Amino acid sequence: MCGIVGFVGKRNATPLLIEGLKRLEYRGYDSAGVAVLSVSGMAIAKTKGKVSALDAELANHPIEGTAGIAHTRWATHGAPEQRNAHPHRVGQIALVHNGIIENYAALKMEMIERGASFLSDTDTEVMSQWLHDRCAQGVSFAEAFGMMLPLLHGAYAIVALHEDEPDTLYVARKGSPMVVGTNDAQECWVGSDMLALAGYATQGYYLADGEYAILQPSTMRFFAADHTPIQVTMQSMNVGAEIHDKQGFAHFMLKEIHEQPDVIRKTLSHYYDHETQSVHFEGLTLDPTTISSITMVACGTSFYAAQVASYWFEQITHIPVRIDIASEYRYRHPIVPKDSAALFISQSGETADTLAAMRYAKEHGAHTIALVNVPTSTMAREADSVIRTLAGAEIGVASTKAFVAQLTTLAALVLYFGGARSTLSSEETAHLMHHLSGVAEQTQQVLDEKMHYDRLALALMYARDMLFIGRGTSYPLANEGALKMKELSYIHAEGYAAGELKHGPIALVDDGVPIIVIAPDDALFDKSASNLEETAARKGNIVLISSKERVANFHGNVTHSVAVPACHPFVAPILYAVPLQLLSYYVALHKGADIDQPRNLAKSVTVE
Ligand code: AGP
Image 1 (cartoon, rainbow, N blue to C red):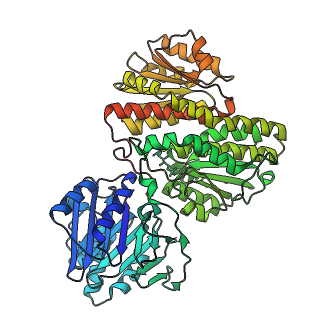
Image 2 (image 1 turned 45 degrees about the horizontal axis):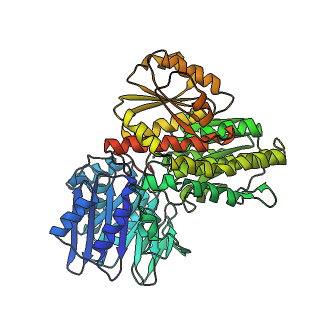
Image 3 (image 1 turned 135 degrees about the vertical axis):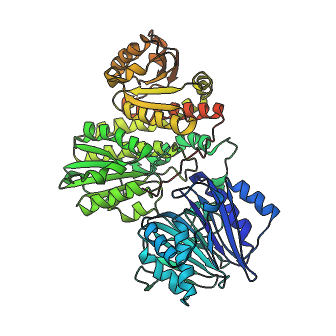
């Protein structure tokens, strides 16, 4: 997903914009650029590759100005080339954009017919050309900017500059997030998310869909989609710059893996009252006794959290559950049952597919619940109920602490629903909460023994393919473990239900294909053990991840085994996520992959 930063004030914008881009690098990108305005006019620099390449270009050819816009591009239309990098300048106008203009081809044709010649293959340049064309007809830039927005179909977060207005930013948002910030120095900031403004802006406002703004150091004007002026309430922004510090860890991902014990503790202390031994969800405006079914929808890692929770909900609350990946959900034209709740899980709260699915469910009468890590996100603003995960800002593109926070929050939510629907006695709730409370320490024990995964990674790093298998709630974990391995080490990996292997995938097994068997000490262990033997009998290279006791007493044919502290089966998915994160981290590390910004990936995918 693209990154956007804008600034207008009295200081030189260039270094501030570059610092802002560096904070957005985690989103994933392939080119970067900056445009600044001063009384002597507009200057622009763009490069293919990383922000460091842009920085080097600016060191050789410095540009200055007190207003500016900057962008990291995650290519949607047009290859990751310098000419497709943003900002896109046409005449006196420069513009950066995050999103997709779905009707750009028609607009481009119209501009070409009016004599425009395009320099790039992007949808974004269409907007610069359109604005330039209108201004050439004598329309003011402010008026042209407002006129253009209703013509754009699709998603956009835009910041634009005009050379004749060196103290003004033009900002608009539909579908892709955009935050406006300010501070006591009367500086105006804009960014794709608060992380870009951390430590600079002290107050912020996320533009709502369709809104736009004209920002100057002295005055900030906001407008609704119909161009009527609106008053907005700026919220204090308490995101400090320290979140951009690896705090001694080699990567943000490793730092965030190590934050997990505290994330679990923080989550449980927020949602569980030890005094009254009760679970409470202040953001939930739904009576659990009134729903007949639950649908859970998400993408990627968040979907695997939903998959784990689907087992918990049905087993503990006896509510029928359906799960779906967001990109399929609404195109399936699902029947949204009467009196149903629809739970949407998202770390960013901005994933386009999940947001669109939530809007579909809401339109069709479901009570929508957003379980998100960013409380100011679009999903949080639009859902009927909001449940926050308390992982804190997650910088690594591969989700780790957010996943563990999702599982911990969902586990507490299931206990809440079970208690409310009397499918769980208060003693049973206290019993399961006791085991949940133990996971933080057990996770710390896994982290204290992380060298096992470092060594195991050396044995697996040259694999061509990997299979991750598990039963019950270990099956979604197998999916998540495979996703982590794919997105971090670029090794092809598949997650499979262990019992499904013999129905075809076992044909893949030979001594070159490691099979990671996720088998907590639960009622399904023996079944998993026989699946393990089935693959071992075919020269499978077996890695068993189980409890210390099971590993010590297992006499089957395993090539490697890793012991995890004993835990209650209910909490196993939370604890067993950590070995899978560490394994993929160390394989990627030994392979020299780009761990915090894996190739082709974005932290939050705000395009469909
Ligand atoms: C997770 O490691 C991946 N980077 C990706 O699958 C992610 O979980 C997915 O894009 C959903 O993001 P969200 O939770 O912000 O909606």
